[in-house]
Length: 155
Image 1 (cartoon, rainbow, N blue to C red):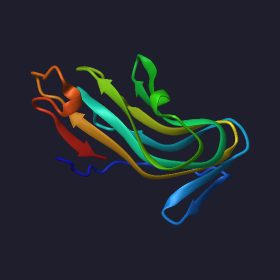
Image 2: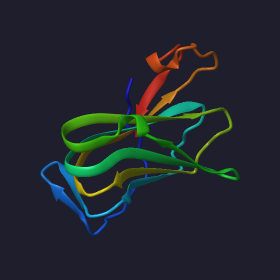
Image 3: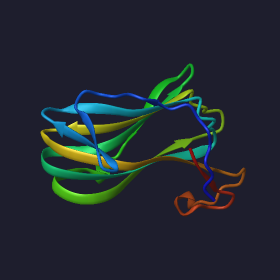
Image 4: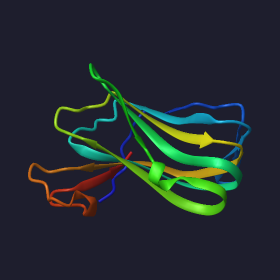
């Protein structure tokens, strides 16, 4: 079940971003990492956090992927990168998602959602989502299919 959760979202506007219809357009002239959102105190622990978005490209000379950073107080920052879901060249809309597994006692105080671009070209991104799938005390061995006691929430 997906539920909306209220949270404070900080949107960082970068000079080369442009809103085009229902998406953001990035005309990249070089390698760059674009911070799309920061979610402070996301109330996540013992769960799978999933960053999901749709991306398309035009004339991308390198590759692009999603990237999520979770900052754990007293431990540092840890990442999940969509290196197995890169796009390159010219593509139509593709659905991309990357997970981050949080164990008991791992409560991030900040989650950062990025779009990584290696090379030159145009990219569009839309339908950005951050989902939380809580995990029960007794987990199924196959949590990728929801598992026992799994429940999803949409920030």
